[in-house]
Length: 102
Image (tube, rainbow, N blue to C red; front, side, top):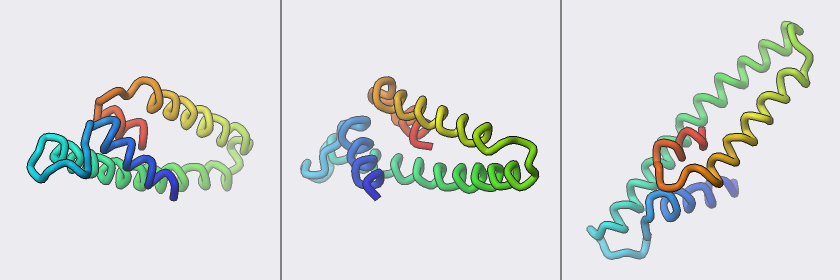
């Protein structure tokens, strides 16, 4: 998906200040590798969280405890806040970038 292409580029270039065309062993090449590793770890954490949240949403909707809009609205709100934080507050913090990604 587009997120994988641009998200990986954001991690490696913007958050970690890496450069894939830098010479081997240089600081920028190492930072690029660390950015790729952080993006992979964040993607795995995101997948686990999505599985858990999907099961929780399905359970809530099947039990009919809440109306669907009361389930989905907080999800959209939290996603919007995470996107704003990723765009304006992450800076060069790899850990915070992974939290926003997850």
